[in-house]
Image (cartoon, rainbow, N blue to C red):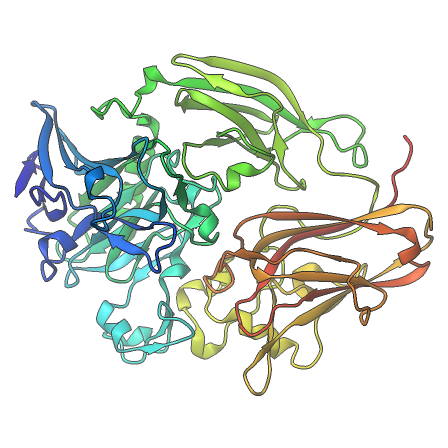
Length: 622
């Protein structure tokens, strides 16, 4: 074993494997679950495969060599490495990566840091990494209260409660039939109910009653994450378990895995993540939560850290800054450009418009603009990037037309940037808000027998289990019909276009209708229907105009998506924008109907979530 002790926290690591065997704090000999093996209490892991493998491999990244990197009165940094031997290729099924797991403890710090360096050398075999994370399993007899946000925190069921419960449509969702806490009886617990967006996974963890101690995972930056600021992933869940997820396909699908080609060199630093412990003499759990948030703000302000010894982690003086001001110009709304308020704007590898959403191998740096569209992206690693953005309330994606080369000490002012969003003609009607979320649409109440009381009376009702089946309850025989100008999308547009359950418990495709009146039609004009999807899972959308029985659809999407956002209580996954041209001859003066059919059946989770739909008239001269 390797022990690091600063007088506040004692960290014990297995040697040479580099797992977290123990964390001592405030009189608790070990806050981790000692019923588990030393290597199964706190650990790095990844799920990987090689192209052609029949199954994936779960790998705990156990090291084979231990080194002390730095040791003085202010800091200790240690390293556990695992080096791949190319001569074993084809003879053993080893992960073809070099792994360097680092642990750092600072003087006076109530916790410890961990970061890792993954490296694939030139000439090595191809590889697919599905996910990577740090998992912490806390002592089951001590930690019962979980907090992941101001309004999502409570006494949680135990692992035993879940084992004794009723498994629902998938193994992660369990109805508690005989929990140790009688107040939880009948509730549904599912780890995916506690997912958050990258930008909001800053602090989460658990509290022990006696002594009153908190254990928290603090993520000061998501520059190493994939999928951008709104990518969803796991946090803490029943166990008691806390995670630092670096990348995964959750709410996205296999597109978000790291795919390394044959012979391709690749290296990336994940972390550091801070594991913080706090305590007080009281018994008010939110007090420890508020202190953890304060510590999170402190850690965030210190990013990029100045203590990591790895040359692959540049400190602040080795990074650069990008600044500028973004405007939106939509001539059918207002003639002159307006400030792009609260726009998400970031740097990612060069690619196509919107490609940042699928980029997984490098770093991304994001911020939001202020009320006047101004932005400042600091702490950017040297490299070549494209600048991407999307603006809440505005459809589509922006991309700056030049590559941006960031060097050590760069301070680049891009000046005024103008985003011209997709637009061919005036808006005839629209449904929803273009914010890449289905959150504004109608979210039904859960069935009383499938409720998690934590999400009652909140704005996050979509986290409840089984909402996909409520569509059948609301529309048992006929599908949703929406009348423009009469219906209210907040009440009349179901949050997910799902299949309908039959009496024989089959799940069949559904066809939604949008009816609308046109006072006049230009038969020679071209109309544009824009359909933005907030998520898709094995979905295939067909559209027909004024003729639901037409053999060939007037427009359609390909079969898309493996986000599982509907099943995993998400309100969005990957974003899709489809722009369909409609000839004026297909429309008529007066009443029209667009039929939207999701043609994939056989599963309750097949379907998609709409973000926004807009019909535009033919172009008009200024």
